[in-house]
Image 1 (cartoon, rainbow, N blue to C red):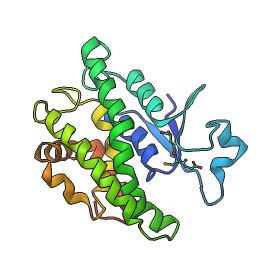
Image 2: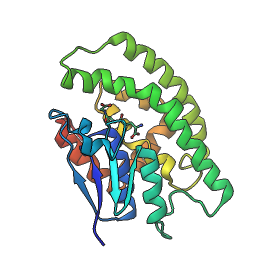
Image 3: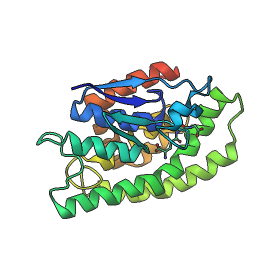
Image 4: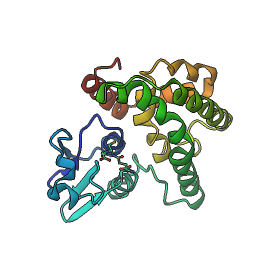
Length: 222
Ligand SMILES: N[C@@H](CCC(=O)N[C@@H](CS)C(=O)NCC(=O)O)C(=O)O
């Protein structure tokens, strides 16, 4: 079987979300780089894969997809096994909890945490602009409130959806990985159960492998 293709740069957060799923299920894949400098993401060829001109896009034979969370679910369904059952669709309640915490990542956690990553790492490196401290401070305040909820949840369960690792946890990998390279990583020390959960995730071979290549590509300490 030909390996599936992921279009985009492996250091991009939304691409890494897809790659961590591919690593978790042990699928063969190829990353096809899309050159942002050359505006390849806005080329007719790439717009046919992703009409919003963004990365990632994904191809598995005739199946062409965009939106990293949807691509990830396709992968987890296609390669589901007894060892890698990360959506828990065989159990209505477990699947619902995976959905709940997947939504929480998208609508509570990521909007609070990602501006810190953009302001401290991405914009200074890609746009040459200094960090906007007001945005960072406001985001950290929001993030603290979100982490209060995570701390309560993770003091009762090993992982977000329950006592099993799931897509809900994997989803947190790319942005949290970069957040840990900002000067604000110490915030997690105030949330011992969240910190232990993150360390458990980072001990997974999938995250160790991708983290090492993201750190090397972005020039940060893993
Ligand atoms: N919701 C989309 C977001 C994709 C996205 O924002 N990709 C960024 C890179 S991480 C991008 O392609 N930016 C270029 C642009 O928007 O022109 C997903 O999850 O796939």
